[in-house]
Image (cartoon, rainbow, N blue to C red):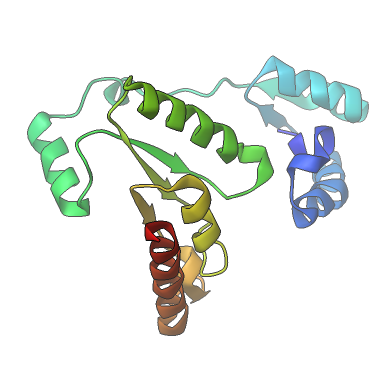
Length: 178
């Protein structure tokens, strides 16, 4: 999508800069440009008309095997392995304005307060020692997941960053408990 060009206020400075500089270069070099929707195709036609003849729409899709519910025994095994609650909403994404996490939290809180859902909220993606405390204070999730946010380089977990992450979680939980 072209969100960094269409709605720059929703993106990080680095994301805006990357899109502004690299996307036009990539688009000029591409022999085909695959987009998921007519909306994105129209955005490209409006912002980069030189690309229009090379744009092809390929809708996003999911194979049939992902439509059937998982085997209940398998679901229970996964929940046990990851200590997940029976019902949960999983947010996976970077913590940035364009993901509209604030709206998710607002709707989730309203549904929980009204008794319409019994789900828990789990956050994954984009969490680091620097932002996990704010995420917990804002969202008050049932759980958080961390992976690359504690790496010193791709695929290498950093013990110091793990300790800092855990400390930030403890401090956020303690502040909420008070």
